[in-house]
Length: 151
Length: 151
DNA sequence: TTATTAAAAGATAAACTTGTCTTTTATTAT
DNA sequence: ATAATAAAAGACAAGTTTATCTTTTAATAA
Image (cartoon, rainbow over all chains, first blue to last red; front, side, top):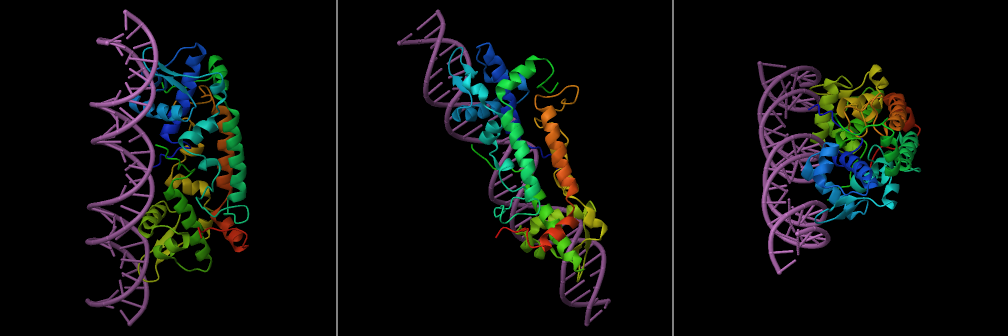
C-alpha cells in the first residue's frame, strides 16, 4: 500500500489549466499554438495534452483551427474563463458541490459530521477558482512575478 | 471522455474516515468491531475496508485484536486523532501542502499564478481537518443532528 | 487539384485504484 | 492440546486514469 499521491485536481485537470494559461499567453500575440508547442510549454506528454485540448475545444473553452497555421487560440471572450470552468469541464464540480465524505444523502437537513465546516471551505475554494480568470493570469505572468513550468 | 468523478479524497480515504468514526462510536461501549460490522455500518465493500483497517492499524491510528472477541477498537488517546491525520495516512498531505497545479518548483519565491490565494485555502482546509477529531464526532453523532450513512 | 499541415478521432497499453477471494497467523475458549 | 474466531497478508481481477501511437478529417498554400 502507501500510495500517497492525491492532489486537489486530476493530472488531466492540472494540464488543462496550465494549457489554457499557455494558450492565452500566446493568443495575445494573435498566434495559434500547436499541441507540440503546448506540450513543451507546460511540460506535459504531447498526445495526452492533445486529448485534453480536444475536450476543452468540444466544451468551447478554447478555439481551434485545422491545417497550416492552425492550432489553438482564444478569443477575448475566452479570456473570461475562470479556473472553476476548467475544473468543471475536466474533473466535474463534485469537489466544491458534493459531500466531502462522499455521502449522497448529506445535506443541510441531513448533514454529515463535517458538513457545515466543509461548506465554508467549499465556498472559499469556489470563490478562489471563479475569481481567477485566464485573462488575469496573462497580467500576472507578464509581471514576471509568477511562473508556470516545472524547471 | 467526460469522467467527472473527482472528489476531495480518494474512495479509500472516505472509507477510512467513516470507519474511524464508526469504530470510535463502538469503542465508547468498550466493544470491539469486526470488519463485517464496519463494512455494514459504513456501507463499504468488506474486503476493501479490511485492507484499509490494516493500514490504519499499521500506522497506529486504530488498535486491533485477533481471535474470538477480537476486532478493532480505540483507546482514549486514539480519539484525539483528527481527520488530517487520517487523510495523511491514506492519501498523503499533498492536498494541503503542495502546489494546486502540481508544480514541484512552486514556492513563495517562485509562485505559480494561484499560489498565494491557494495558500489561504490550504490553511483553512488544514485547520478544518485538524480541528475535527474523531472524539468530537462521537458527541456530534450522539446529538442526533448528524449522520454518516448512505441510506 | 495536389501536397502539406495540424487537429480530431480511434485503438491500444501501462499504471494505479478499487474490489474480491484465499491462505496464514495469532488469540481465545473449551 | 484443539477448535473456533478474527485480523493479517497475499494473490488476483475489474475499473479508471494516464500515456502512446495510428488513422482520419479539415483547412491552407502552392
